[in-house]
Image 1 (cartoon, rainbow, N blue to C red):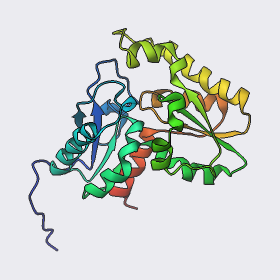
Image 2 (image 1 turned 60 degrees about the horizontal axis):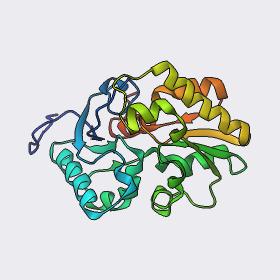
Image 3 (image 1 turned 180 degrees about the horizontal axis):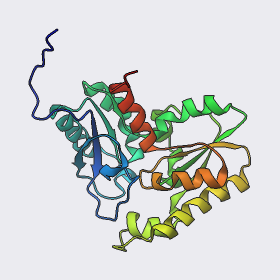
Length: 240
């Protein structure tokens, strides 16, 4: 049987496109902006928004985002994800404008995880947004409502995150210290909320420490890389 393949795109063979911010800080495997985080090829596109873009949302910023997404779509990727979980604020609108699937944030997994662990357990969300995550646009567009019990851990309390990533005052990252600080956030959350049944890492800078969180807490940890692997397997199902 002859397999017919049509043209129409400049590139091929890369199912997943990833929108990343034009940030200048050290990256390690496990970060969405580090290609070695994946066992399959990915295609990147920079979204030219400033650090802290989510603190002042407007139409101009959305147009910058969707323009980059459409460029990826035009280059032949079959689905898009991102390197910033707060892009979820534009999930609904972007999904309607694009012709391919887009998963803007691991926060989209929150309703599923809550079903998995049961409503008697709480979902521990570690986020770069801190308390601002509770602003209606982030939760609403993620499908998180008052039926989903959750608690928030703030990366703002992590000095390595603030100095290297948020404020970019340091050009070198102490990965060991960063890991210790992130694990401490998870431990502190559990000490305050023993009912936590799983962790969800909103920020794409902390999946490198998902294994450490799981080892210390004994709980499942969901993150951006896991979401991207799920999306890839939906596009490229394993042959048995």
